[in-house]
Structure formats: C-alpha cells, structure tokens
Length: 516
Image 1 (cartoon, rainbow, N blue to C red):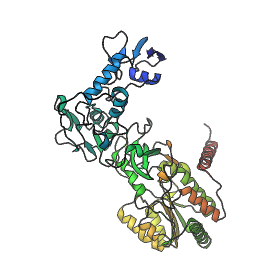
Image 2: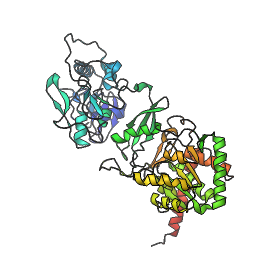
Image 3: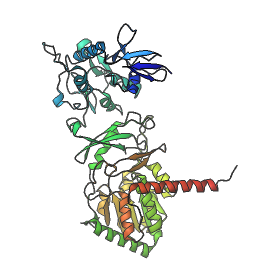
Image 4: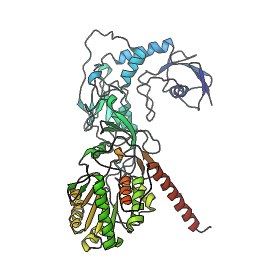
C-alpha cells in the first residue's frame, strides 16, 4: 500500500486511490465541481488542482492517483493562485443572483468563493447573456447563466440511466447544456440531475421557490413509494415536508432515487384523517378508546372470533404490525387475516419495483409468511355472505382495481362493525363506525423491510398532525381498555420483542428440520 504525504500529514492508502480521496482521508478538503464519486472523471473544471513535488505542473486531484512516496500540497501559493483564477473565470459571466437562487445555501460555487476566492470581479464589460428558466424537461428547469459546464448531468444520463438526453451545444462562453433534438429530460430519474448539480443551473419544478434550504430540517428516513425503500433525507419546515432527497446507501439506492418516489411526500399532507370519529361524531382519544373497545369486545362476545376479519397493511411499519399481530392473537383470536396495500405498478431494472408498498417483506417477517392472508375478493365475498360481520382495517389502500374497490366499499354496509385505523380520510372513513387517525411515517419512527429483506429504520421528523397517533400506540390503548394490556412504553422495547420472537421462530424451525 502506497504512503503519501499531504500537507505534512503522512497516510497509507489503497493502491489506485486518487489524490482527492487521499486528501479527504487525511482530513483535507480539495474543492471540486465536476467530480462525483458515482460518475466518470473528466477533470474538466480544474478546481481541484494540487501541487505534487517533482511535477512540472499542477495536477487534478480527482483524476491523479497517488504513488508511494508522493508529496502533495493542497494549500501552497501556486494552488491558491490557481483556485482563485478558476473561480474568477467561472464567475466571469455568472449572474451572481444568489438572493433569488434556489441553490443558495447549498451551492458549492457560493461556498468555494467564500473559502477560496473572496475577491472583487475585475470584469468591466457587459456579461454574456444566456437562457434562463428553460424547460429542459417536465420536472427540471435550466438556467444557462448559472451553469459552469461541469457535465455532471450529461454523465448521469449517459452512465446511470443510459438515456443520453443531454449534451453541450455551442462553444466558448456561449456553450450551454441542451437536450438532443426531439428529446427532453424526461427519464424516471431526471431530478437526480438537480441533486448533483453543484450550482443553481438545474432546479426542480416541484421545489422551486418553495422554501429556503437553511430553513429546512433534515431527518433520515425511507421512501414509501415502492418496496425498494430508497434511503432519503426527509426535509421539512414547520411540520410540513418540503422535499425528499436521496441519502447514500450503496446496498439499496446508491446516490439516487426516482422522480415518482420524490413526490410521494405529498400523500402525507393530503386528505388526512386528523381526529377520532364515532359514527361521524368527533371524540377525544379517551372517549373513542372506550367506545371502540366496548364495541369490539361485544362483537367478539356476540358473534365470536370466527366472524372477525382483520385487514393488515404493508404500508405500516414492522413495529405497528407486531402490535397488530399480538392484538389479533391475544385479544381478538381470529384467523381471518387479509392484506391491503397499494396495487402493483411500473417496474424497471434499476430502482423502481412493481410492489408499491414499502413493507411487504416486513409483513412476511412479522407474521412468518404471507400464506395466512386472504385476498380482497375473498374478503368481499365473506362480507357479502355474512361470514365476516366485523372488520378491523389498517390504512385505506387496497391492491385492486377501481371496480373491485367500489364493490368492497358497497359491501361495508353489510357489516355490524367496521373499524378503520388509517392516515387518510376517504370513502372508507365515511363508512366506518369507528375511525382512528394514524400517523404517517414522517410523524413516528419504525422499521421497513425492503424487497431484498434489508431492514431499514426511519426516524420521526415532526410531531403528529391533529390527534393522529402511531398504529402501535392505538393497539396499546385498545388492549389496555379491553383488559389485556400489551406492556410496552417505548418503541425500542417492541423492537427487542420482535427480535426475540424472530430468534425463537428460527430456533423452532431449526429444531423441526431433520438433520441430514
């Protein structure tokens, strides 16, 4: 392994490590624009030039690999002079419109100017005018005057999506990013170009002029758009999600996420069920818990558990599902289980999965398998024939077409008791005898298991909206009122119980498996 000295700090690195990465390991920042760890290295911005002893000229740190005994200076007089020159050249025709730029606050050009340049412009002629607010695609707008031609967006479309929409047109100070004739930037991951743009040249139509980035709080979370479970930064202001940004995870989504998944944050704030309801009347949690528990107990006593149906949801977390399982087994005693969720949709060979539910594998993990769950048509038939007279439903999504959903809604009139525990107000909430408002993933913490079986925790971003409550806490309240308390206070206790239950199941399965 080669040893390299960077600013008098000697470190040992793997063979093939670039100077830029070696400097980062040594604790030194080398400024750069065109370099991105997931893309090829064109070394065209020249911002990362460093001085290597024995070399005739400055070397691009993003491209040059270290050799044993190399001595590198990232803050020498030659390097500082080169950095100032590069920044002055980039800013020559830049509009310097930071006060109205969406990228202000997270712009590398802005940061590097303050850290490495901070000198007044010497330009006394009129700046070159370029295109502004150019619709380069349905989700992305382009500002040519801010563009520094780092080519990150071009390389992303060539190397990651393989769609090749973008190129550079014109030459010199007239050069700009454009789509090829007859094309637009409309691939399924187009807003990733906004994420990797180091300046404000590419902006998202959805986030544009929405909120200043320094007002945002960021929470580590998981996208609920499909079963891939892309890791995200959930960014919010005043208890409202403003945007999702991909969070690096090489096992799941690398640096990327799809455009459709980014917009699923809107579901959190749309048509929310915010207050407990009993036959259309608003109650507080004390009142609704007493009412719901009494009605559930009476239904079980009168009709028995055999007519009690429970509709679980793969949109709920593992912790929610674990409490649901215990509620079903220890209090209700029914084996009539059904599975809701969103219907399957589009899938590609990159990140987007056909299963649009974030925790289908979590349902399988908590309940042992999916074999014990009936489908929605069989539930509808059971309701219509009177085999199910009481239904407890988590969430409002159903994996069926519109006609089947309408048949399900109509069948609800046959029930003696319909309890809905969900985030959203809907036609189902209007039919419910008891409606219990549940939190979204942004208002609680928990775990999703993605399609590959990777368990992924997510954190609470802000306080619950209205009177909504996490699913697991609702089950706790009902169990306590029904005199069969589930003794958990904190979510980490549920997680420990889930782990112990999973370990016990694995040991039982191993014990039952005959030795070869």
